Length: 258
Image 1 (cartoon, rainbow, N blue to C red):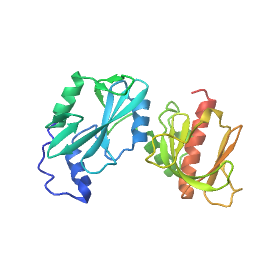
Image 2 (cartoon, one colour; image 1 turned 90 degrees about the horizontal axis):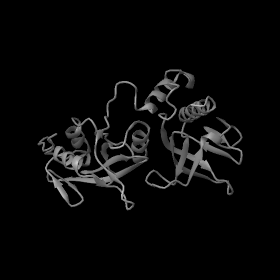
Image 3 (cartoon, rainbow, N blue to C red; image 1 turned 30 degrees about the vertical axis):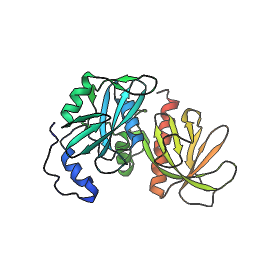
Image 4 (spheres, rainbow, N blue to C red; image 1 turned 180 degrees about the vertical axis):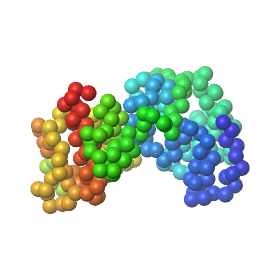
């Protein structure tokens, strides 16, 4: 794939639109896919050595190469300046040379010595089955269907992320947190940029998810666990309904033993 294009003589919106035109021909370029969503996709549907390229939050010309290594996903910084791709101390004239190099030379993924080889590009467009299960979930909800209409054999594929306002356990104040749903884990972070979650909730211990009207707030719902009930508020009733339906679907799959 030759990325030495002259289509980018002009920077538009900090270079984002221009780069999107250039990378549109790369089937494994996922644009502004977030770190958490990349991990969810690769762990749910990828294999050891699956990889994808996405935009980094560090600015134009900065990307992240996300690679699955067995039971984890590693992220590597890639920069493009002066038509040259830089990865660590290596420089490549195009992405084809970049991939060819690391297809034969493993990447060192961590201090523990995890080695990875770029084997399988993870496509942005997928026919069937749909990899972007969150899109399928939203489509089903928006067309008046229910959680029962969703694909029953894919509980691990239903992913969702977004900001919710959560009530504290001891001081009953409300704070905005970034939530990610993957498999049976609902994690919340201080904000979208944080890598380590404040807490991980195992939905297999959750007994109910429902709208809640006991709080002095709108668009609230709650997750009931044996040790505590978590109260959350969405920015709109539609958003709250989407969270409730996908969480209830998860619980239904858990009860069916899937």
